[in-house]
Image 1 (cartoon, rainbow over the protein chains, first blue to last red):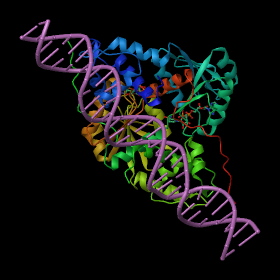
Image 2: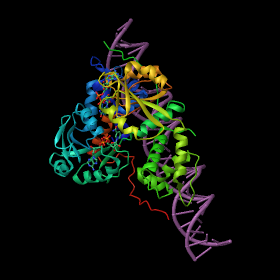
Image 3: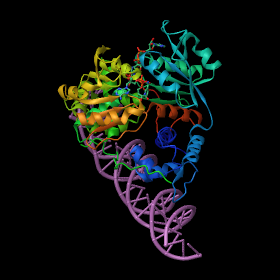
Image 4: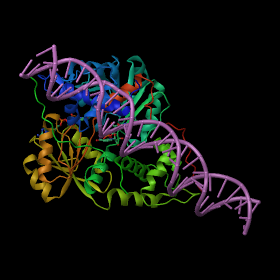
Length: 223
Length: 223
DNA sequence: GAAACGATGTGAATTAATTCACATTCCAAG
DNA sequence: CTTGGAATGTGAATTAATTCACATCGTTTC
Ligand SMILES: NC(=O)c1ccc[n+]([C@@H]2O[C@H](COP(=O)([O-])OP(=O)(O)OC[C@H]3O[C@@H](n4cnc5c(N)ncnc54)[C@H](O)[C@@H]3O)[C@@H](O)[C@H]2O)c1
Ligand SMILES: NC(=O)c1ccc[n+]([C@@H]2O[C@H](COP(=O)([O-])OP(=O)(O)OC[C@H]3O[C@@H](n4cnc5c(N)ncnc54)[C@H](O)[C@@H]3O)[C@@H](O)[C@H]2O)c1
């Protein structure tokens, strides 16, 4: 099955919900429960889950632990990735604390910054290195993914360097679009743009056309 | 014209590019230049721009300042919004510094936190208040948008309170989906999910099916 | 054990998003 | 002028995403 990145995104969402915000006493979950939690339609959820090769049981729904296991199998294919934060400023540091506690398959093992006051020390549990050691450590520590938190003016330059050093994927927070050779995954988060969207849909009719807002569904515990 | 939020998102992108990262000496821009910068097709860009009621000139492209003006008109309809950050922890503080410098129509004028060490002082130029004053200030200062940076466990509760206080849009960073009544705009940014996407497309064939990566286009300066 | 229920899985229909392809327009050069 | 060219604007085609609708099936109940 060839996952679109839309499906992919929703699967991570379901997984996060199930692993972290789902009553542990419930062993089964219905498609419409998941749907309600993420504001989607039940058939959408079922479609997404079809990609997993796991099947629910008709009257009961999906067995939670089994479902999670299958999402894991598909999403991270058992691999674990070492991640580096590049640019240990305000955002970089916030991300280090935030991400350290999360998903075990993604480990933030290093940070890099060209400000000497930030490098050669441990920030929030993550060792921060000077940029000079980038290539050495990316290779040596098998860092495959970089979270780019440098100013926009440096973003493309640093990204190129990361790619040359062997990075296979970049999550870019700088508010400039960067270009990478094919073969390197790229995801960009433009926070300003999201904020502007909220502002926009605040003034005009409020709900962005597509999103469903079905009524809340009670998560009935099954005996 | 009824903008889909997809179109809307791209328009903010174009605007950001044009206002901040486009050579000031160029007065015209081609659809294919914009396209190249954001990795989309030229016809996509033209379609998006059609929504503006502004028309480019066939051989020259789009006049930059005029184009920006029209995007402004459509996107923020002249309105300016007051914004508050709720939860002035790591992320909240990073956002305050980051956003203060940006878009003039969105002004961060307050922060709120229930930690007494954070409230009643000015953080990065933004006055931070205790949660008790939320309702009073939202009304008094006409705050319409909230950026939600509280822990997941408090997110829904705080969101409900914000809505009751009169907030019209929320940008949620907590990694829990929240539910709002129709009529209140909602945008959620799930950073973990984005990171997981990068990781995913790092292992499998690298490029998420949909994205184009056309070859770089030189931005030729026109005499 | 059989009938009713209430969920799933999925083909088909619908709707949305994107791309194609080309007529149109306007500038520039001769 | 008039001709050529290079970009726009857009209907039509295509492709992707979502929803509908219902046959199907395991569970429960009686
Ligand atoms: N702070 C936010 O909430 C926020 C939100 C969205 C996007 N962003 C973007 O993320 C990036 C970082 O934001 P920030 O607020 O952390 O800024 P910041 O100034 O606090 O941090 C930037 C860090 O990058 C380092 N740096 C600069 N040039 C570098 C280079 N060439 N190589 C290595 N390191 C370099 C600096 O020393 C600094 O520590 C910016 O592009 C910003 O636009 C920030
Ligand atoms: N730090 C990041 O980079 C990052 C990234 C993505 C998402 N997030 C999410 O953003 C949120 C904030 O993250 P953070 O790293 O800033 O955490 P943090 O603990 O540094 O900040 C949270 C702040 O919220 C305040 N708070 C807690 N409960 C509150 C309540 N009921 N009312 C008002 N204020 C309250 C706390 O006093 C604290 O200052 C979390 O939900 C986190 O999961 C953080």
